[in-house]
Amino acid sequence: MKRIVFLSLVIAVVSISCKSLKEDTFHSDYQNIDLLPRLTCWIDQPSFENAYGANSYSVKTSDDLEHPYGLTETPYGKGVYEITEKTKLYTAEKRIQDAANIFVYDVYENISDPTTLRAGNIVLRAGAIYCKNNYKWSWLSGFTLGIFNAMGMPMATNTTELEVIVEIYDKRNNLVAMYNERGYAKVPMAAYHGYYEFQRRAGDLALQDGMMKIKELIARDFDMINAKLK
Image 1 (cartoon, rainbow, N blue to C red):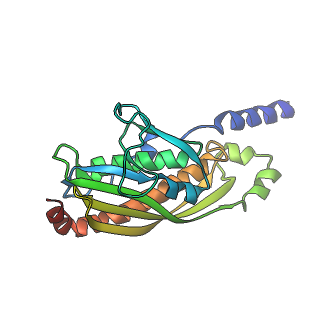
Image 2 (cartoon, rainbow, N blue to C red):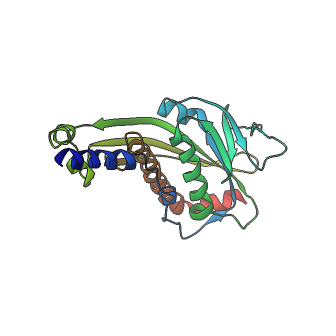
């Protein structure tokens, strides 16, 4: 009987350990009071590949007929791509696609007004990163045969600190403003997160934390940025 109960717990843990992140993970609810005119979003994909130790092979935008592989000319450096909510970045590293989704949502909903005339471009880059797993809970997990983990006890934690860089340009590609902030997140690994997903969540939350700090700076400089975009 005890063996049946134990196996049931193991099966339950395994079956929920692959649960993916919810969509609202990528949606920040921190909105600036004053919104800039519409900005086109760009992402420096190689900078995120360097941060996360990943590789990609192409970019494809589902609604881009003129450039079916998303390889538009860019003045912002090699591998810096224009992105929308429909852009799919072909990479095995989910945190890079997450970064694009988080950034586009934040710009469209919290930084600029997408219903106005386009006034310029906004570019997201990743700088230095600190990412470390802490397995201090693992000995207790092993001692209790994972039973407490099935009830929500952490199995490990991940700490991610990411340098977030945002640049705003006018329509003539003149640099209007540039911000550099460090985002921080510490996320526990519960059984339902899975080994990779809790690191992914930490990276996403660190990016959101950095973006929140940058949004505060944009709000501070709103009059200056808005004037230069006209």
